[in-house]
Length: 338
Image (cartoon, rainbow, N blue to C red):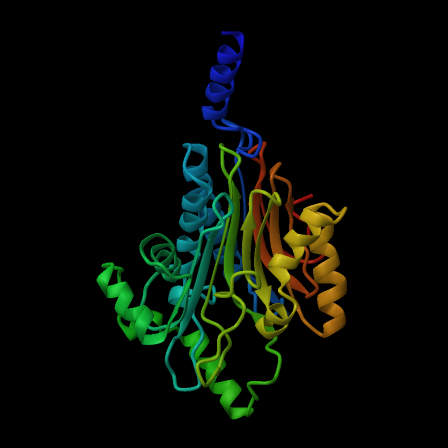
């Protein structure tokens, strides 16, 4: 009889879900965003334009953090923040995307759920207003991770994703960039001075992590070029088990070769580095030694944020677990993560 009771108790305990990896519940959320890194010239960034940039960064933070503060998931918080940046003509994503060599706009995005390791991404898609929303549909409503080109657009139509006409994506500033690039015969092998990408990483109240990234890619790009933004492990990665979420911005070819986002999380999971230390090692040492330029935003399972970059500036902002909000641009400005 005693043995039977012990067996029954064991079965009951086995039926109770383990909380070992569930993370804290009802904890304080945190969020970090970026709007691209590179040689951000003070001459081009006029006081008025800077005010617009900072205002949009604040709006993205409020959108994403509002979702998290209300108990929404890290995934939903990331998407809310990224959508605001995609809807702005100031950043190279969505509405503000750069022109390709042929005068079109080819958009890339990716999203990853750190709790399940589910991911979705799109590359070279034309006309989709919010590529980050389409990446989420790829993750949730298809058996795939990455869809590209016309096929991705077909899937978007099936999913009733919003499209916008070509003129929606036309900005004089980006068109002038294309004209200068073509006049100067800038090679597609040349490193761009500004790496326009937007992204977000988040920790929600349940202790779950997520990351997302969106971009228009490289000015004057050709031949269906894709950078790191739609590549899981290069431009985006999240893992609750590793306690790490990353969104990257930079010269994509280097970020792909170095598997930057995954490398940071792997160093934190299997090595003796914190996520912040791993991010600094990868961006400031390994990537720089390869000749790669750019930066990342990271958040760990405790909500600690890091934003290292090896360029002159990176549009960035955060809301920490205490609710403190900060935005910054240049390297000599206070890092919102610290």
